[in-house]
Amino acid sequence: MKIGVVGLGYWGPNLVRNFLGHKLVEKVIACDLNEDRLTQIKVKFHGIETLNDYQKLLESDVDAVAIATSVNTHYDLAKQALEAGKHIWVEKPFTSSKAQAEELIRIAESKKLNIFVDHTFLYTGAVRKIKELIDDGELGDIIYFDSVRINLGLFQHDVNVVWDLAPHDLSIMKYVLNGKEAVAVSANGVSSYNCLENIAQMSVHFKESSCFAHFHVNWTSPVKIRRIMIAGKKKMLVFDDLVYSEKIKIYDSGVEFKSPESIHNALVQYRTGDMYSPQISHNEALSSAAKEFIDSILEKRKPLTDGKNGLEVVEILEASEKSIKQRGIPVYLNNHTV
Image 1 (cartoon, helix red, strand yellow):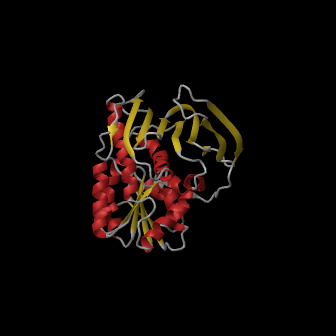
Image 2 (cartoon, helix red, strand yellow):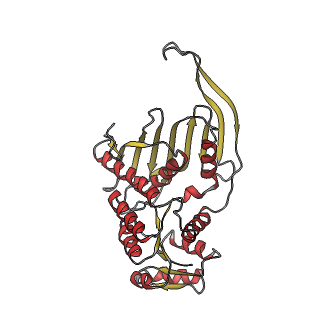
Image 3 (cartoon, rainbow, N blue to C red):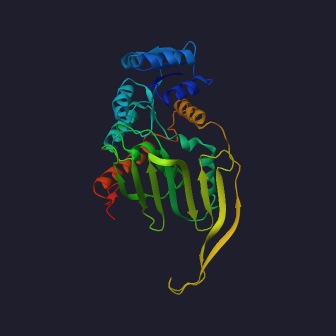
């Protein structure tokens, strides 16, 4: 297989490395308008072919194109690649709007091409283990999903903090809470330095009224936190991505009502038991993602993180932006009204 990578900023070189390391990839062509980046990639990967013209990349014999450019360019670059008959890999978020995502999916399906959206965390051992625990009923019925992803980070010039940071944890939420249907989003945010929100809080409401998800994203925090808490009626889980060992901790803790009477008369008992940390795989997620992309093409099937997966995340992001502009008024998804 031959793969082109367009965009050699922060993430592009990682894609080049992982595709070159795959046994079924015989050639990678790196493409960028910036000549300095092309020079750097040649030094890092001796003998790699480079181009500064995207149209020439599309006219080449590559089977697929990986797009690692700014969000506002994803749609145009992806559409051109699909129309040229190339499978596509697109960085998160998939597109800038739900309508764009839907059009790309239609084109791909009409041409029998694959779309892969790089929701990298779904290929980590930690997130795979979390899904396994939830699917096996280890936590019981899920009552909340709470995410904090904050740091003193890079301000993006084309998207706000929700579009930049929230796709990671939204994709995790959709994956591990598979089966729970999101129906509405409410969000609030503030722009401290420019017109793009740098701090935001977002809530996702599910059809099952007993479950709730909350997200806190922030570019202007004095500390870096990458933490998810998931509570079930049986046990609770904490996932801290910034630690190497014990990334996941399971707490045998919960709340129990000892009376079937009204909540005012019920006897509430708080239960605190043991904590344990399950063993997880530490394989590089991007390597696993590259394998899934290539395998899905060769096996003529959709990948785990396909266009529909990307669309679902984009729809929530788009709704959050509308809600922020309306000071937190809920915005409904998929034509839901209640």
